[in-house]
Length: 54
Image (tube, rainbow, N blue to C red):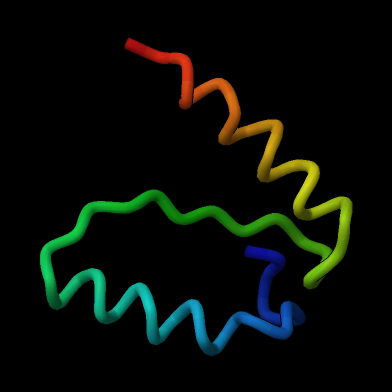
C-alpha cells in the first residue's frame, strides 16, 4: 500500500477489515509514494521471493 496518499487506501482498510472478520491471514505493508510505479516495484521486490519459498 502506498500510504495514506494512495487512492486505494480507504478501500484497502475496508478489505482488511473484512479479512479480519473472516479470519483470513494476510501481510500488510506501507511504502510511501501513493499509487505509483515505485510503490508497485517495491511491493513486487518484496513479494516475488515469497512465491518461491517452500
